[in-house]
Length: 196
Image (cartoon, rainbow, N blue to C red; front, side, top):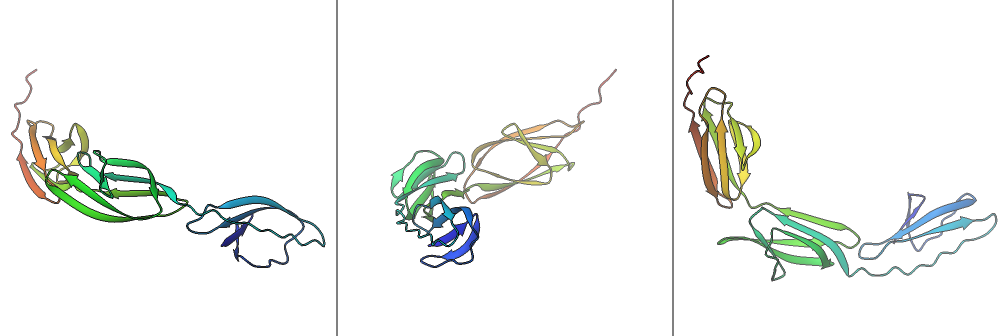
């Protein structure tokens, strides 16, 4: 197991550590798959401090699995019916299936003990947006994403708005499938000058 004294790596145990000055120290013992043990030790002049610890094996760990909005997650055959799973999983490997309509993507994850395990598996498609004239503002589901030319990632029903000052805006709803690439060019018509 790994030994740290006051945050400094002292190697592994079992071991004998010499030349430690007199005083109070924070001792930390850790090993993958086990709970970390921490305690305060006091080194006295001429004394030998013996530390004996049995680390407890970790069976479960925190995990968070996220995929694209509109998709669902299946963990080891248990359908979560949502695009996000947050909870405890047994330490080790798990099968994750990401589902959207008829599309499925299988992934294997490894949950490590003593960690907050986070996994993100986007399954979006791409939408390449261009416009004439270029430099138009692109909104996706009413959120500004940038200016043309622009590539965005989306999944499912996606509302696109392309606008440019002095031009009519263009609106379109697309159904973007996982792994697909959609190229859209929007020709913006010039709006009449305002009369004052």
